[in-house]
Amino acid sequence: MEMTVQLTIDCSDPRTMVSFWAEALGYVPEPPPAGHATWRAYWASAGVPEEELPPGAGDLAESIIDPAGRGPRVWFQQVPEPKAAKNRWHFDLKVGGGRDVPRDVRVQRVQATVERLVEAGATVLRIRDDPDSGLHAAAMQDPEGNEFDVV
Image (cartoon, rainbow, N blue to C red; front, side):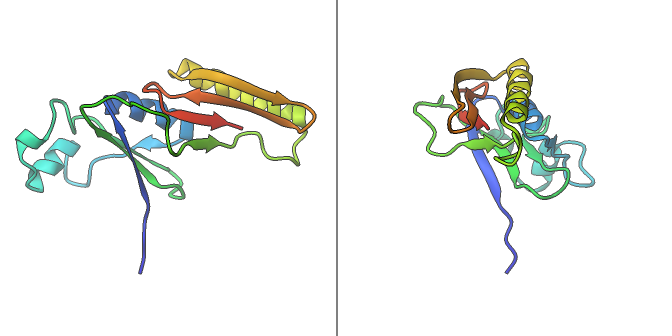
């Protein structure tokens, strides 16, 4: 049996999340299925009642995909309530290259990614820097407050 994985993230503004996480993960907004100009048009053709679609839903992509086809699809599901507590899961964006890469190179890679993601809307929570263990990482939040790490 074949299985695919989709990560669904509840959020208040799917467009902001699509833009941010596409940048963060190197993904692209998922185009609507063939023959449909928008996701809303696709959902209408599939019989989803108009009253079940929030204003603006499906006008732009609400999911992102890995253009190389390796990573899971990520769908940003609009929900009415805001994030209320710490994540029980999080992304680790492993940009440093691992322990075989010289520490100064890993630090530079992490810092460059942190700067890029701050420009895209992220917030730095803390930088963890321990030269003795070789660790250099940043704990961050996306535009809706979901935590993730850059290592």
